[in-house]
Length: 598
Image 1 (cartoon, rainbow, N blue to C red):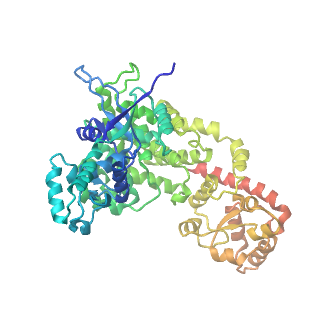
Image 2 (tube, one colour):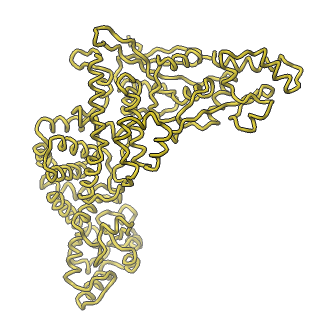
Image 3 (cartoon, one colour):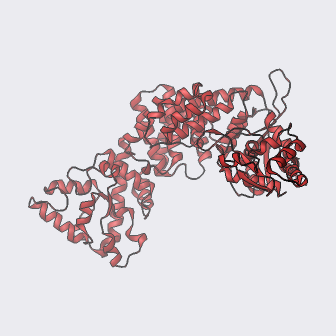
């Protein structure tokens, strides 16, 4: 016999709003600020007036926590789905201020036309129109008297049928007695089960991540400043992307602006580097894993709830300590020196544009490695080398692409046991052997995807080595990436298309080089045998061809830095497959040499 894992009950809207105002149901704002536009709020009220259902809310009951004095706390419920509907009801019915998508505190006011039984978003014209009730919250207030209002309203509008207006207003007042379903999930369910239930009963099909559940637990606990921690995470991530938001935030949320959290992020107001723009999931993951030495966010949810993993009880002391540790991790994450040095390390490895970084999890774990090493007080040069290598190793091996949480958990525990340097050496021995560089990586580079992580690492190796662009005398690959230079096909695309090759064949990354656009245009659709012969012939005579290089030795050196196989002056369509095999191996060896220099 299966065990019922949740209960379903119908409650009057008035009751639910009372529970929310009293804190019995916590709204954690896991979906960020209120994102509905005002017309959607109007439509929700209209649906209630017409007696239509407005869906279910889903709440997850917090476990009962053992307090320090030995007594047990009364567990509250955390709303995990339905925040937008509840917020809409609170602003329209109770007249509460809400935080909009621009983080401004606003009130959405809904107006009602008693004769036409029509709702609109209130505006100055409606406020002056005597046929409208400008704010339904006035009608829904406990002290509102229908008889007095109807008499006055009918006199103003010279209406004789007071009964029709009375019925219309009475129906409006009654919307707070309409029922809404509340699905309440048991407190002892784990995140996987909660997620599964959520997906099955949520008609919208939206999926909440484990970070969402963690954010809900954080925001719902005001005893240990969870509401401020949630804002800290949210605001930092927003400021990292939009530093101009700083002054709006400091004006609109003066209470938060006075906190230490805000002081720790003020440096972002002048920061425009977008190499690492973390989401709230990224920030939570890094702060949690670096401080707690765990990788699974479900463990963070359990610890913030006070879970004792040994006794399986919930204790206030563990919840308090967990919030303190999380705060410590967030402060380290936000620290200007830490953040900027980490970004500088990425740039020093050749990753100079956000478009070059395809794995956010590899980025996150590299920052975890940096924070762990920084706490250990190692020499800066050692930290830089280890972080560069860890990041590039992670990208090349796709380390965090499969089951990132499990790998995070495994890696941080091994690092905690043996240290970063020793563990990295173990990983290199296992995953970066000669077989990887000579066979594994070249095979992985058999792809037509220009955003391939292998091609991005190859470009980073060229940036790191300060290579010039293909056929360029002065312009570097760094310059070309920064200023959107061309990706040129060594076997020109149209040449290959004319010979019947498909997109998957002519767009192979082993056929790509970074090149100035004017050189690319000059080469046109000539076969390699044509334009390479011309380049070699002219440079031997000290003449310029295509690029600015006139010297044969410089040309050959340029070819080597771009992993160009020998004999390109003789290559035509029948040599294309062999060319790809040879160049993949040369590119893999360049990446190998670059990696060991990091």
